[in-house]
Length: 298
Image (cartoon, rainbow, N blue to C red; front, top):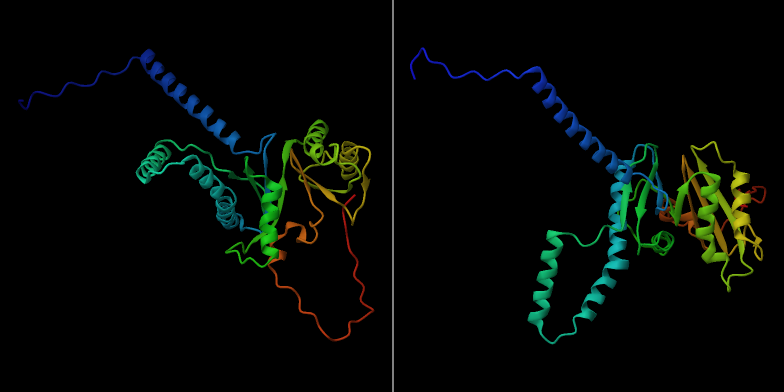
């Protein structure tokens, strides 16, 4: 090519063509935004979710979420992983070791290509300090899962980390924080515990917790839940058979039913369960000191 020759210049886009390109970009951005919005919704608490609330020390949310994931994964493996393995072994009733190995290889390859199961719990990011939520799915049942963890700690299990984690609160079902949502959740959660043929004569208490919500009053929540319990049962604040937990956070409402050892297990407060038991002193106590017990049950 001679020095006088030049490479052909790129043709300048006409106004109409430039507008068309801009529209294509806009459409692409619009699709991406919709995808992101869908993802954000899946990361928020939705009506019908089951899960576990957890509280922690201030500004220790990230560390506490990490510690809780490790703890939950350990218990998921213990409670559900072994059952899955035994079921698979029972299905493979073969005398051929080679066949078992081939089946295992095929299963591993299938899991690599496309995971067959979703995780049993997922942490959701909240915009409130000291508060976390883990969404759970079957077969993980929040009440029995949390009870197992707390009972193990009470029995002396030395769990790693969890330095900043405080209380766990299991939630069997959630709905929107409206009067209709409260009635719907109460009907769903309380039915198996109070409305069966063999469920008559239960002693119960109600413990509501309301955070960042000005629409509900404590007395209204208690009256609605007590009405949903139905006849044939009576309130007993200290000697209850069942305790109904009602958690209201912003526009989300959740409920669960726990057993009579809730107080013994420090209201599922891991921090208190991990503290060493006080030593019993042989010295006489000062009888002038009085202790008053505060309860917010009804």
